[in-house]
Image (cartoon, rainbow, N blue to C red):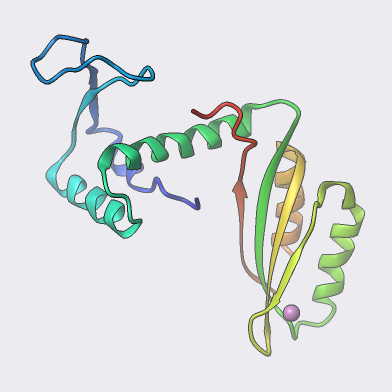
Length: 170
Ligand code: NI
């Protein structure tokens, strides 16, 4: 679950939704598990993009794909708004040859060891390291730690993935 909602940015303006009342049309059926059917109007080109994305991600039907997109948005919203502890996963790709870089990254992590649950280090090739670091703590503290690590000179790429305990998702 990385950044699955890019096309929302271009689509937001054109998306219209309306709730279909139960029994309002011949195709309606009683909602199971509180499911609600609704109609979404999209530009044809956006629909093609959506279907390509859905197919590439191996979703067999649009409903499950859209449900997961909604959940991804909810995780993002929940993540930034919640009080208390949350979780996130930081990915770092950095240059093995940059002098003292690994030490600097390790120092930062030791300073805030209580937020770091574990770390996975992969030597990608002779010159490149990949680290995957699950973090826990307040959202703002996780973001600050992630930014401190990402901004160290020699870090080539990185991304913080907000995660969730999943308790508020259905
Ligand atoms: Ni390495």
